[in-house]
Amino acid sequence: MTQAYLDWNATGALRPQARAAMTAALDRTGNPSSVHGAGRAARRLVEEARARVGALVGASSRDVVFTSGGTEANMLALSPVLGGALLVSAVEHPSVRGGGRFAAVEEIPVNEAGVVDLAALERSLAGRERPLVSLMLANNETGAIQPVADAAAIVHRAGGLLHVDAVQAPGRIACDFKALGADLMTLSSHKIGGPQGVGALIRRDELPLDAVIRGGGQERGVRSGTENVAGIAGFGAAAQAAAEAFPGEARRMEALRDKFEAGLKAITPEAVIFSAGVPRLPNTTLFGFPGMKAETAVIAFDLEGVEVSSGAACSSGKVAPSHVLEAMGVSPELTNSGIRVSLGYATTDDDVGTILNAWVKLAEGLYRAGNQQVFAA
Ligand code: PLP
Image (cartoon, rainbow, N blue to C red):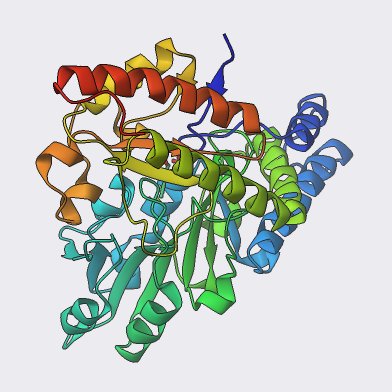
């Protein structure tokens, strides 16, 4: 059976460049804080990676703070030292919706396509002192792209700061720290073909950060702990590879994604593709089918050799309806049927064929269960 891994928004395959950089780093001994030659060599690897990660989003290396991943970078950003109140969109990742280190968090609604309501944002900002706003660049479930640059202008006019969770964006859509007007930006290595457990917070002009992890004062005092040298080297190599492959790789993924969506609609015209009418990531489809149970469909796909997820993989283990689809006002029936298919740099035409063949089988069962005529076309 051909296996098709189509869950790249959960995590992507390690790029060969990242593997090579990590293997080389693992074969060396040296703490980047040590002054001897071995330490300086380890420091060089970290600083080279810092420049590469910065370059991926048009930031300078001094703006890059390495963390253990996107979740920690979000926690580091969302601190009361940067604002008197925290406002986040209703479709943020749980690590942002949780409010970081703020006691309270206000949610800004999204429209039925999952795009943040900028007028509501503007209203919520009125009269606030030093607001901190957190808005993702692209949603991990629907792929919907948020109007971040417009939001930045609104937030800055209100005297606030904007944090952008860009975890799902680099290598897929343009993601320039300065052009977006972001003050802080979160990145995660494993979404761009680097290893898991590494990420970065990009910050403008050394904005003051309140360390989550304190100790030896690494990362300019805002993230203590001996650096994960091999992980960081892998992240740097993945960042460089992703930047070099952009936008060709994104266009290739988009063509495959469009082929999948055309096939999906041909097999089951009733399938609903969420956020289809707005700009989306080129690699992501979140679809629903009336009467389908997403958890059951994920298992059925798996038995057919297709790995996809129901809503967000980060919350797997607990069967909770997607807060993203709920925020978009999608009916409970369709919300419970949401299946996310996400492609990556190694996705092939065969993978698309495999999932479409699997969907034919699943749909046959669903039509039968629903007592409907098998196949419209
Ligand atoms: N933000 C978004 C939008 C994500 O999709 C994820 C992971 O799925 C994260 C943050 C968390 O990143 P990490 O897995 O590196 O902690």
